[in-house]
Length: 221
Image (cartoon, rainbow, N blue to C red):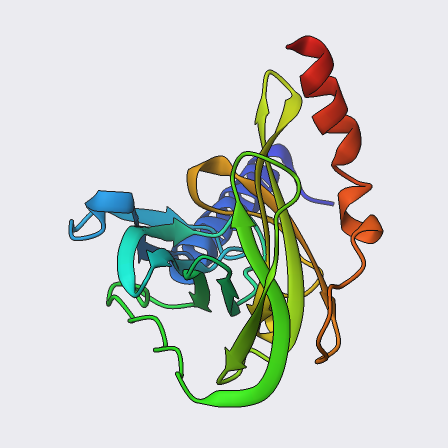
């Protein structure tokens, strides 16, 4: 049986070992957001975290309207995700989240993959609207890896109440289908895809999730 002094010695050894293990396994990631991503700020990640690098880009008629960059330690397990969408009114959106583990492995800015302009034979209804949960779609010839017809609804939450933010239809990569995530300016989006065919995809599956919020907005106004 160990005496008090021996127990204290064993406890001290355990604490020291745990500290050394944490020190070895934890690592530093580049940390920045939006316009600060050219700085040398860092953050120390826990062993259960990973470094991430996220880029989001809105473009209109081939001209970049908004580019958002973010880097740091992931909140939990980091899952890579990259997709692109082409809406009507010549509006496009690209999203690229990358994960890595290692000292400042997310330091370098990785450019978004250029979108192909080669038609792939698929046609989708396309439109984009930031004022109403509907729009008048036109036929859009899809290009490159955008082989799915998509529908997207976006909301922003203010004081725990969701408000309508955007509605769009168009062509998308398969990785953009059936997502629920937050994008630029805190907009929460939900997406729904149908197979590669002409015609309007069904609206009920996605709009039913946001219609109560839209009706609530009308009542409050």
